[in-house]
Amino acid sequence: MKINNSTISLNGLKFKSKIGLFDFEKEKGNSFVINVSIDVKKIIYDDSIEGTVDYSNLFSIIEEEMSKEYNLIETVAHKISSNIHSQIKNIKLCRLEIIKKNPPIEGSVDNSSFILETTS
Image (cartoon, rainbow, N blue to C red; front, side):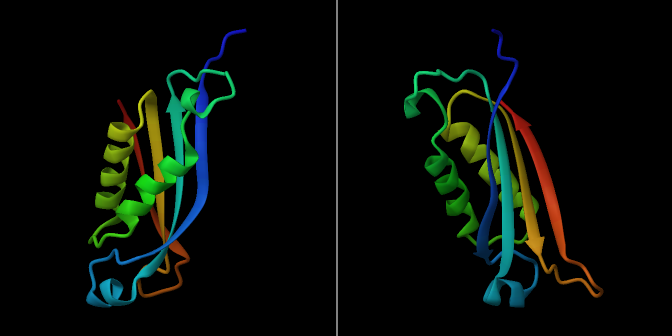
């Protein structure tokens, strides 16, 4: 059997973060949802965590950046992706989506989002 691709994903990660251009966004924060998928170069199928990506480590990398203050979700996405590539070995591709709930736009908008794909 030949394995063409292996992808590990975490979806619907929820954070309250102080990310935004406006002072009230930095003071009150906003709700964000993150979806991340990682294509792994090689998984060792020996039923040990050492042969794959540890979900809790991946979550911690994202949580650390989401706890900081930024102006733009684009910047946060780049920081998270850079940290994922530097801290987790064996990554082929990282696809990260940051969804900002209730963006400060006049009108009825559920969310805004930014998607970043990076390779090693």
